[in-house]
Length: 362
Ligand code: M6R
Image (cartoon, rainbow, N blue to C red; front, top):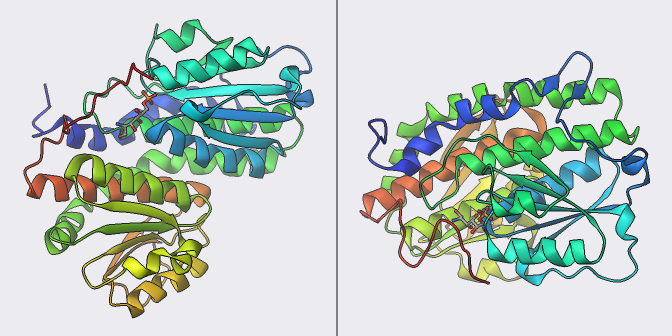
């Protein structure tokens, strides 16, 4: 049932192109710059919307952070992201003009359900974005959007992260169009990049040998740091979460600009730094921050846009050009890196110690 793979996680990493195709299937009309998500917001609702609040945990929280930036850029709407266990519906907001979106793969995460109940209690409209038909969250929200990634068995979320961001990118286009904030031409550009996403992810998966070689080289490191800006920032956080979750190694993600404000003190020749240097991640500025780490002898692994010349990296991993989705594709390298480090250490990859696939306690 693992389809010839040793672990579900690796199978699910490799399923991403087909999962993404399924996520996008019959939902986008690239020529017209429109999407069809089968969501019925009340008349005038999107135009009057003042804020979109995301509530989520773990990997779903990082997918939400990615999306909040998409919404600000393409839908001209304020978007905030709160860790579900920290969420309160705060005063000064009009519940009718606030959409609260619960992003949860399982649809059963107690912290996220608690947050959505507080939002609904305050009178806000709620939307669930989930992978699981019939899950609790779908029964407690006004609307549901399915990410259609297919079942995910490994505790580490992989294909669901990619499908969450892709689904939420479609939602961004729908909201941007609905608010009159996104032109047909700009919507077409975003949708073209989205349509190219499954193929781009496949090209990265085909580079797995390279990732395995890098994992072999660095498996005994003291710690691993991940850095990025803009769309690369949530991906850095997600890369670190994945590595610590399954390898039990110390890994941390930082906003690249923050390295010099403290974390640089931890950097040595035993701490590889993995950086998102692509389009959508302010690659040039991040490259400068990476150099600061290299000056302290840190090995540098950079994910770069294919064809862009990047000097003096220890490893340059290439992603095809897909605009603001390049950091999402970069994440596939980070998933494979985490997997191979953990596999070389013979960890219990699909069921890491102390963790559960869905966390049903607060
Ligand atoms: O089912 P959910 O998306 O609500 O789960 C949220 C987190 O528990 C989950 O993403 C967790 O962080 C993953 N195991 C990370 O790989």
